[in-house]
Image 1 (cartoon, rainbow, N blue to C red):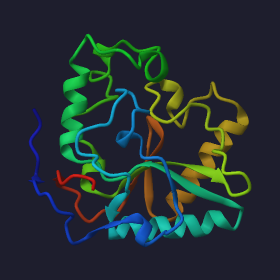
Image 2: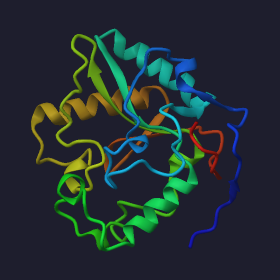
Image 3: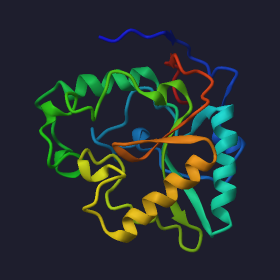
Image 4: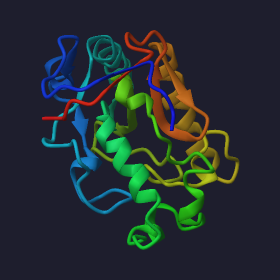
Length: 214
């Protein structure tokens, strides 16, 4: 087991965390871990409401991203933001249960379940629990459709890597657009997931929170 530099258990949202809609009122979101539409196939412990919670610093940076995209008639769509540590712990327990593979064909068709942890698809700690990481994509403001990124969100596969060359030229361009606008406003991407970004100057780099999303 890893050691946390700091872990904070609370039932209330800390002072420096806010609901993203307070800063971006009309942001599009699809909180997957509050629903059945995720790699486990059911709502995840810790997600008690369909709301997005992030640090104030991350929210202000995302507002700039949204404004920037709007000039090209695009906008953000967010799949996950702050993630309670209890949800991460649940992912680990699920990954160690060989009998539950109900969502394998959709989310990890080319990876055996017992390889999800060794290959780093699921880990004992997540930057999401520090409050300044988001999973997201870009949508068109004309019709609300997501840009084609080559894979769906949360596909555990090398094809989800931003550097993967098996996707089309347009799909790679869409991924690059997302990485460019996020980087411009202070976020850094993850090499294994085109949708995952963390604020570079995150306020809690060593603190993992466990208050519920409500």
